[in-house]
Image (cartoon, rainbow, N blue to C red; front, side, top):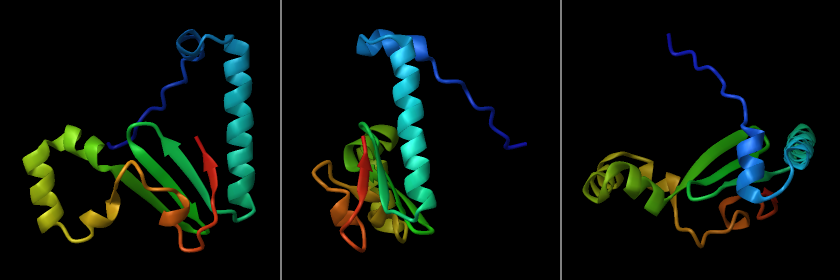
Length: 115
């Protein structure tokens, strides 16, 4: 119970949506994940920008997910989000504006950004 099956990336669909070959899509994704992994291994601060969702921030051993306000509003509804922000301790720390920069969300102000 609770186990999730991983879905394989659909390279052909990504290739069609981005107008590049599937081979190039595979190469780009593998290169990006390799660099991401290397940065984490070396203890670099990294941010993975998730379009229209938010940012995954990794600083040393600290991992945080920050969500764009409009994404949470779309997922929960405006009234539900407002209530949650007022009632749930720490909830406000998870919400960021789209204009937030990854560097402004880190302790050091230094971060490698992965779009």
